[in-house]
Length: 170
View 1: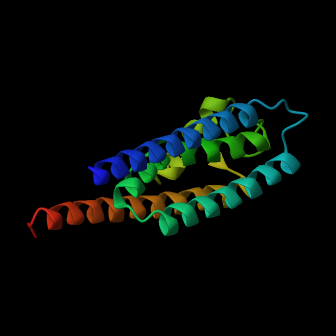
View 2 (view 1 turned 30 degrees about the horizontal axis):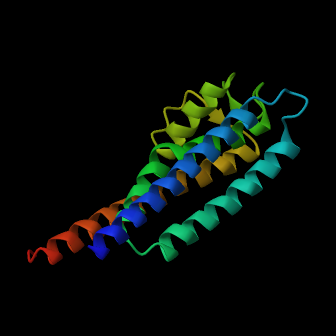
């Protein structure tokens, strides 16, 4: 019974943390991608890029090192893979502004979000192209996509293995 309570509390904390990450990334995307041209630009974009880098490093450390439960890692990585990281990178692209200052061809927030998902998944259609510092940010996003996919697969395999070992199957 106490194991079920522990699992329920763990699941509740994981969902609460995931919901907070979704909220923060959505808010960051909304506010940074809707800056007017006087506010957006290199200075604001650089600050957003540094903030994103710090956030990513902290999240990797928290979830890859401190979270020992493969199930929690699986949930958090799945949510990060689907929503959080692409939204945060799109927010950074939006902080640099439009008019081909960051991504050539992006004219509105949805273009930045589309570019972010295409870059994060390393699909790379080529219809939008990063320029300047945003090229470095795009490379970092692609690498982040690779790392998150690797962590997601590792957590899936660990969860599967742990479940089957507990049930006496190999």
